[in-house]
Image 1 (cartoon, rainbow, N blue to C red):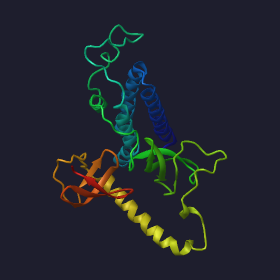
Image 2: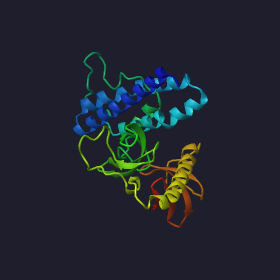
Image 3: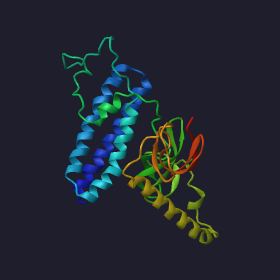
Image 4: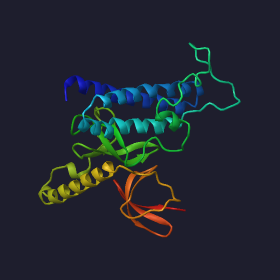
Length: 265
């Protein structure tokens, strides 16, 4: 991959994370004008992503879909919490246009429009989803898997590159020791005996993660559906998982953070 292309990809990632912050701030403020202004920031990112895909080889497209594609998916889910225009109420006017701000947006420009039209009560982040975070071991921003969420924000993450587990942050820690790494990252005399087990567990986890990501179909969990063991589903809270067994009123699903019994009631 050329340096210029890497810069383009990194710039797109940075812009996506910036818009995530803008959307989060708009939702938290509760102010409709801010929320109306945040929505139109997303379609240009989608167009840049689609243009990048069209210029990529098949192998690069797969990598882009698993990184930037998932970031955009998370952003769209987050944007579903933005305020929507309600029929019968006064419409906010754009400063540079003579027509309603929301109505001036082109319809069905991308799948973002249909997603935004259906508000969902999902958290901003979910266990099992991916997020960009600072990895102290790699000394740079990397894609991480979320393994713990607190107050709708990632609490603990695992680097997809070096597999180290640590607290979520987006920049290097200055002098704080609050984000202590997981015990397995500390060398000790017993490290040799535990290395084999850790390597095996890491390999199995990577294989399972690849199986989840490579699944061409992963229907969103609906308690009314008929399920079968081995099926890959997408849970709105815990992400993708593989059904281990089907019980009378629930299903046992293996997610990236472990087994969970999901109620069908």
